[in-house]
Amino acid sequence: MIKRWQRTFTYINRMIDFIAVGLSYYAATWFWLLIVRQDSNNPALIPGNMFWFAFVFATFSVLGYQIAQLYDSVRGKPFRFEFRWVLFVNAVTVLGGGAAFYLLRLTDFSRAALAFFFVLSSVLVLTKRLLVRAVLSRYRSKGYNLKHVILIGSGFLAKKYVKTIQSTPQFGYVIDGYVGDCVIENLPCLGSWETHGNEVLSSSDIDEVVVALDIEQATLLPKVIAATEKYGTKVSIIPHYNDYIPSSTTIQALGECKLLNLRTTPLDSPVNAMMKRLFDIVSSIALIILACPLMLFAAIGTKLSSPGPIIFKQTRVGKNKRPFQMYKFRSMRVNASESTGWTKNDDPRKTRFGSLMRKTSIDELPQFFNVLKGDMSLIGPRPEVPHYVEQFQETVPLYMLKHLVRPGITGWAQVNGYRGDTSIEERVKHDIWYIEHWSLWLDIRICLRTAFGGIINQEKVAK
Image (cartoon, rainbow, N blue to C red; front, side, top):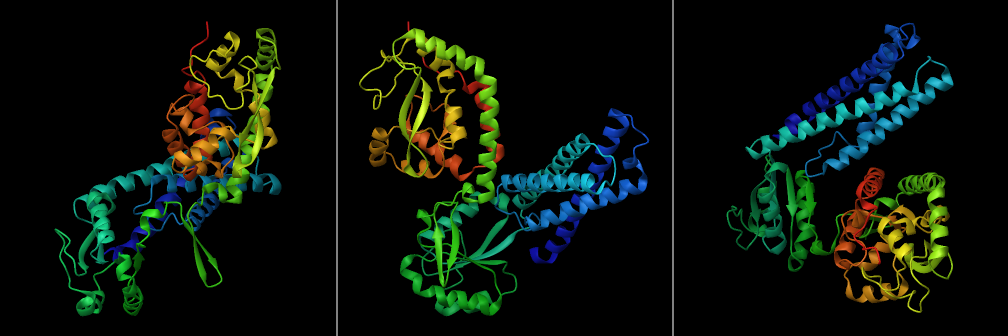
């Protein structure tokens, strides 16, 4: 059923995107040149120019969406997949168009109009995709647009898959039956593999075969794959080590060997890593300039509050478990336990001025220089001293995974309330979620949440 109308739906989807992007160009051009600049004689408003520029922008946008696989089935994929790629393709299209306007002197076109075009086209395309998701979800929950699946296996993995599908009807999967020897409740058994396997797979009504064999049945796998290839049936495999594989796993081909990379992160991509580093450099320079008066005030206050250095340097563990010197304004009296002592709310080592700095996070400002050096990032898991890293490595599950990326001044855990003397386990969960779901937009969100609510913490000012 799905195969018959999927191609038509894809054509319609492309056409709607094409129209949305084209209309966005018309709207952005008219709004900026006619209403804002009141430049009715601008060559960009000539009907022929309007049409061809809109046509080119729309064509390249749709082509970019196609390359990004946005017209493939997104059944089961989160909306952030579409959100990220739509913004990326639109940004590349607009930047490319702006460069062409400038280099080829095609027309006197405003960069502000291009920026407005980017925003408008992104909003229209993403809104359309949200509506399509909502309509399809409701449609599928009523029993339409279903993807028919045959399940091979009846053990623990097979039952886990059945439970997942039955709890997510909005994805539109329906299991027509299973091939196996054990009983799965509320699901028709189509027989054992030896007696009915080939007969079941020869049906033309199957959209996909899902193989969920437990390790004891692994010898059946070559036969099942051979049968699906014989009948040209799409097949997916749930490996028996499913519970040990994170969602970010990727496959690397090394000769004839396929390697499962269990901890692949978005920042493993050179493009993503470059974007994040560029964001860190630009942001840290801007913040250092803006915070100069505040840092001067903090330096004077620290010097007057108690004897000792203004800048407190402490060894922390960074990316790939490498130690580095992290900078802070000294908020405590010089003491023997400063390299290992855990700071608490009522810590007697804090000076009154230092307590005020910690309350407002002013003591963290020198870490912008750590970011500029490359030891830290603006956003990331908070770094810890080696003493506690060694301790948590043995007691907190997955703790060391936070060292896959540069540590940050603030992070997902901090803006969700896990800072200072709070649960290490919850902090690590949030850090790992951030690492696995990183995006530039997520970093911007965390920055905004830090600026509008995450700067003031729960520490009390010493009396």
